[in-house]
Length: 196
Image (cartoon, rainbow, N blue to C red; front, side, top):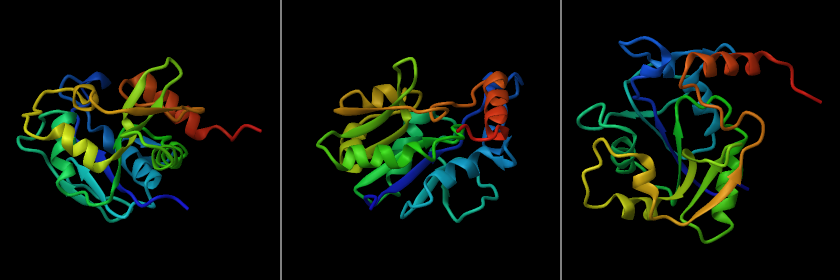
């Protein structure tokens, strides 16, 4: 049985790498007939509470929406703001542009619950940790956040003091949709029949 957890989904990015200088609402983009945000929300369907930091929009499941102050302060500030609404001892943090996170989430929670680390982070095929597809001990993440202004700071800076267990990504779990090319790859993967 999976350990109790809350989910914190970051859905407020400007999506400027998508090619439109005005930015792109990535969370609303379609992958396999489902918005990116709804795909990520489905990945944390077992969360006791799901907090989305970003603009309010229709979703396939009930969530709590909130926006960091000021809006657009960056992902670290969004996490710190969202933590105020989290209650479970474990929080899964996800970017809204990771459409294949569903199989990674239980592995991350199990890796964290089964040890003494502060966080379990997915590691992509190039060996990079993905702090926006990770499970954290809520108290440890709050300790990192305490007493600093995180506007404009990176998530790596926020999490650098944590002890981390790494979980290797399988298949497309670590694929995020930052660019038009990555979005195309995600759509192709979503529409491909399962291998095997």
